[in-house]
Length: 224
Ligand SMILES: Nc1nc2c(ncn2[C@@H]2O[C@H](COP(=O)(O)OP(=O)(O)OP(=O)(O)O)[C@@H](O)[C@H]2O)c(=O)[nH]1
Ligand SMILES: [Mg+2]
Image (cartoon, rainbow, N blue to C red; front, side):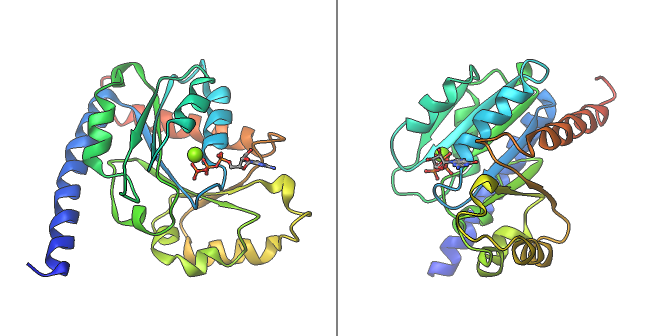
């Protein structure tokens, strides 16, 4: 087998595992999000603040992936949500099979929303479907406005782009118009939210969006 064959085989196996996982999520009617960004863009902080705003109306669980440590799981448990940490060792992304095993530790039927925090990386996670309903890509104002142009697969596959840390915009000379133009170009179908997990700016609009998404998820099901 060539390297290309091996990669295709791995992606095909992941696609099959993701399809099975999507079936489980459909069965429990859980709205599932896959959150992806560079290391340190603010995923864990954003999830913690999202959970605080969704509970108790929408019961939310979290699966969090990192190469090592359970630091993020410990931080997220402070929100009161059930959290499962996946440590990937040397693997730079989450795979559907890892998420499937982690999800066995959660009561999916009791969860309205499941947030998956992927490993901090703007490249590899783009190729791995996790059975999610929404792929959310975070871009913090400290990273540079050109990131959407440099990492096309990630931004092209985004359903939502979250611009994070906007409280730091002035301090780092963030060019908002340029960043939004680049996001629009690479993620034309994505909804965009400009947020700060420190000040709470933009998080009410994000919450409203999730309430609508959750309702749409439920109404697909004639039993709900
Ligand atoms: N000023 C400001 N700082 C933030 C905000 N969100 C996160 N931070 C800080 O940014 C740093 C990284 O935040 P995390 O939430 O750990 O980022 P992450 O993307 O989960 O990091 P990894 O999981 O390691 O990839 C921390 O020091 C946070 O306090 C924000 O909205 N504003
Ligand atoms: Mg994190």
